[in-house]
Image (cartoon, rainbow over all chains, first blue to last red):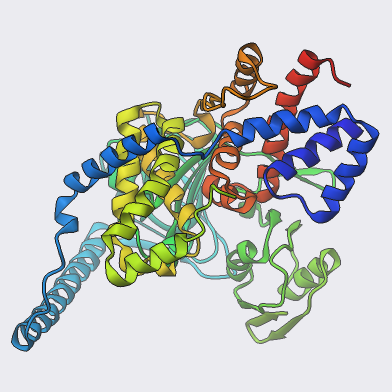
Length: 356
Length: 188
C-alpha cells in the first residue's frame, strides 16, 4: 500500500538513510497524499527534541566528569617526566626478565596440563578430517564423533562415580540412563552434565562458537570459568557461547569485559526437497546440512567434512548465502552443485580448493 | 547533524598521541550522556548506568594509545556499554541468561520543547505509550537512531543485528507512531 510505503520512506528519511531515489519517490507520494505531510511534521518534532544540550544538563555533566576523574584519579596522574638513560635500560631489562619468567611459567603450566590430561584419561578416540565415527562407551552410551574431533575418557568409566569424557570438536551423545551416575562432557569452554538424554556438542578449537543442542531429556550446562552459573536446556533448545575473538584481535582493547556472548535459541528444522533436517545433528546420519550460510561460515564445515583446505579469494562476494544438504557427494560434486545457486569458480589441486 | 561531533576523530588522535586530558574531557561530555541513556534502557538504574558509562569512558582512556586503530569510536563505546550492562544483568539474574531481546526498554519524549505545535500533552502520552508497546529491540533501534543520531550501520553493529533488521525495526516504530497520529488527527 502507498501509505505503508510512505511510512517506510519517512522512517528512512528521518534516520538519514534514504537514498536520493527514495527521497524523490517520497516527494511524489506526498504530492499525491498531502495528508502525509502531517506525519513528517510530527516526526520531525519527535526527532528534533533529542541531542540538544541544555545549560542545566551541562552543569550536570561537569559534575559527572569531576566525579569520574576522582574515581579514577590514578589514571590521570601527570605523565612521569622523561627518565634518564640508565633507568630506561633498567626498565627494558625488567621487561625482558618478565617475559622470560612468564614464558617459563607458561611452559611449566603447559607441561603440567599435558601430563594431567595423560593421567586423567587412558583412552582417546580420534576422528580425522573427512570421516565420522560411531562408538559405544563402556557404559552403553552411544557417541557419534564428527570429523576432526577427539574424545578422551577412562576405560574404567563404568566403575567411577561419575562418567566423565573430554571432547575437542563435535559429537552427538545418546547417553545411557543411570539415575545415580551423571554423565559429564567437558570441553575447553563449556561443561555439560546429564543423566540420560540425546544431545549434540560442538566445540572445535578453532571455532569461535561452542554449541550444545538438546534433542530429548534435559541437560545442565555451565561455562567453564563461571561454573556457579548453571544453565538448563529444554528439548529442541540450542545453547551457543560465542567468543568475540575477532573483535578482540582487531581492536585488542578490551581485556576482560564482554568477550563472551551466551545465547539460547530454539532449533528449527531445515526443510529441503520436502524433507526436514536438523542442521545440528544430521551429520551423524552422514548428511551435511547448512542453512543460509556464507562461504566464510561454510569453509570450516566443508574443510572438515571433505578433508580439504579451502581458500576463498577476495573477489567472491561476501553476500553469497547457501542452503542445502550433501550426502554422498565428493567435494567436486558439492561445489558444482553450489555453483548452481551462485556463480563462482573453483580449482581443485590434491587436497587444496581455491574458490574465486 | 549536530548530534555527531564533527571533531570526534581529532579528539581521539589528541588523546592517543598527546594524552590530552582536555580532549578527553570533551570526549567524555560528548559520549557520556548517550552511553548513560543507552545503559539506562537496559539496566533501569541511575547508579548502575552511570557506573557503566563511566567505566566505558575509563576503558577508552586506559586504551587511548590504541584508539586510533578503532574504526568507529561511537560504535566501539556503545558495544562496550552493551556488554558491561548485559554482564551486570547476568550477574544479578544468576540462574537465567538475559539476552538483549528480553529487556524491557523505555523511550521517553520528555525533552520536547514547549513551543512545539503539534505534539501536546495528551498526544505525547499516547505516542509514548505506543513506543513503549514496541518490542525491546525495536525500541532500542528507535532510541539509538532518534536520540543519538546513529546510522543504520552503527546501530546494527551495536545491537548485533543486520542493517535490514534495523530498517525493519525503525519502520515498525514509525508505523506505530503514525497509526496514533492517524487516529488523533483524522488523517488518511
